[in-house]
Image 1: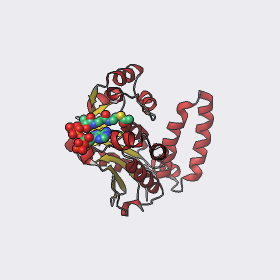
Image 2: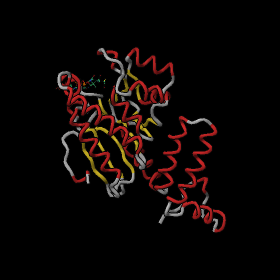
Image 3: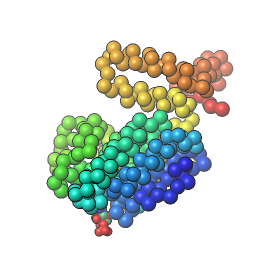
Image 4: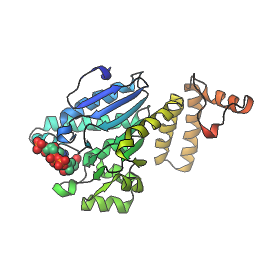
Length: 275
Ligand code: ACO
């Protein structure tokens, strides 16, 4: 299991509650993403998917940075004449971002500091994002001569408005956690000293729900984005049926019975208790 392995650029620890803490771990380089970091993340994130002890994945950064984006030295300059490593690290990056995006487990980005350029791809891949109010975000690509590539232009534009996407991509200006909330880039921003506490509170709330219901819910919300109304009706009906078969905890039956018969809880105010 990845929780028991040592990595050079990634720190992973699954705590006793089931929160998998995954950290970019190159604090001396502001957690810039090197090829090695991508290879390690690819292994860590895919391993966590089948790790029964991991219920929620939290992605954060060691030190003052979440991630300062791609490593200009190791990811760009040193691979300019090494197409093999460039290719492998590009794909490793793409893979681990997709593992995060498609994970059946809830994923939370806990943005503790700098978030630049390529870091927007894993940020956008997480289901929920919480930032420190004074975190610093920026599309700095324009400042040093490239466009927001990989898939940064796409994921940024999917999260933010047309105006904000163009403004921040073209000026390279930075913005803080509060502005990121305003733009729809993250769900909430809190003072740094409350960041971990609030993240754990969200993780605990998610762990109260049936994992199957949660997985199907996030898959459904993501899938309908590209569908028209009729397709979405059809898809959601089929998905609902599939969930009833997949949810071995029988959450739906239990929820109805505890609300309607036993009158022991209210679905509007929280999750039905699990065993
Ligand atoms: N690539 C390579 N090295 C980096 C990166 C990076 N993206 N970010 C930081 N580092 C390194 C620095 O070179 C420095 O290394 P050194 O100690 O060996 O000289 C070390 O990390 C610390 O960096 P400082 O700049 O001294 O730290 P400071 O706290 O003053 O500034 C900041 C932090 C603002 C994040 C700054 O380092 C920076 O601008 N980094 C680049 C951000 C960026 O533009 N990323 C690329 C986005 S585009 C893309 O991802 C495709």
